[in-house]
Amino acid sequence: MPNPVIAIVGRPNVGKSTIFNRLAGERISIVEDIPGVTRDRIYAEGEWLGRTFDIIDTGGIDLKDEPFMSQIKLQAQVAMEEADIIIFITSVREGVTEGDENVARLLYQSGKPVILAVNKADNPEMRADIFEFYSLGLGDPYPISGSHGLGLGDLLDAVVAELPPEEHFTDDEDVINFCLIGRPNVGKSSLVNAILGEERVIVSDIAGTTRDAIDTTFTDSEGVKFRMIDTAGIRKKGKVTESTEKFSVMRAIRAIDRSDVVLMILNAEEGIREQDKRVAGYAHEAGKGIVIIVNKWDKLEKDNHTMNKFETDIRDEFQYLSYAPILYVSALTKQRLVQIPDKIKEVSKSQNQRISSSLLNDVLMDAIARNPTPTDKGRRLKIYYITQVGVKPPTFVLFVNDPELLHFSYERFIENQIRNTFNFEGTPFKVIARQKK
Image (tube, rainbow, N blue to C red; front, side, top):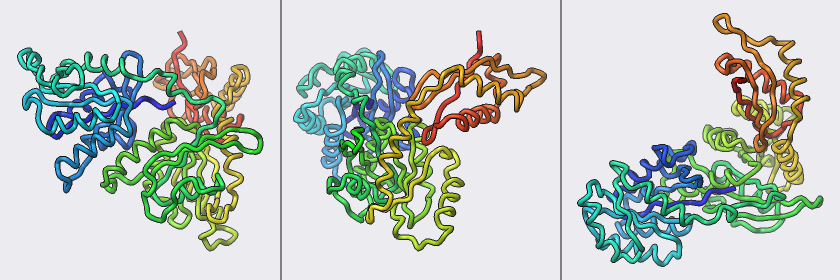
């Protein structure tokens, strides 16, 4: 279920990034930084009054050669397209400027809820000097101080009051949501078209053609419903220079958040790149089901050892994805494409699998008998029982005498025993140690 999106917009030097960092860096808003994206300080997940939302900082747009008006227009455009709510940042020190009026006109036309914040109101006198901002026609201005953290609670109260109902973002539970991720030009759009059997997405050999995440629903021959999300290619940090591509990364992360299963697309001609591992890390850390798809398999000159060698390379480079199945396909020739929906269903089943506590504890006791629990400074780890507490991903709680005694290597041993006994192909799972009271 995707979060509603809040965009921070305003002309340069009004403190957009300061406000973003304040929201993303303190307990008032932050839940979890999204790895990789927030290194550029564009995107963070936050929470206020029990509502979770995503924050985007349009100050992260870097247009060194663009004129002032083009920059603020692009910021407003991104906000209007991506956000459910817009926070418009102004500055009490400069008062209402022509740039503020231009931004206000653009945002007023968007039809999106706009919360007007007057930044740099660091003392009571400044907080009282905000009445001229009513002239922008965007409702009550909220005096805040990004540098001191003043007024942010009132601002977020106003934001939460404008959020769409939570059910607005609820997906159909009977649909398997999956997305395709990977570096630009690995053939994601071609795979979308080949799977659907029709031209639903523009295909081009130019890297980075796809800008948006595009939802397409279809039903297979067994009546299973799928929702497919094609995402823009995720570029390596340092190469994401075009502003729209920065936000395509954000869209890709949102697509992963919405998905049950992620297809990690590799280019057989190019082999495995460092960025492939980083991209797959997004999905792994999010606990999503993963299938590794090696596309353009028809382009390789093969012998009897080609597939085995490629699989060895994948397992060596993606050691944290040892659970992920691998398919070798060709969008051009449609080689093995029929296997993709079946594999998605298998992985989705693994993601939703529940194991009874009795079976889990039988496996646990057998594992301890073969490999006794370790000791640390004379104290031995005691494991009392295990139970499953969640799915998507499967999550297990291990009750012990002291969680500090559960060494990483022994935790991994228990995980391997569970995975070897039960079919959890394609999905990571979590084991959480808790002290038995």
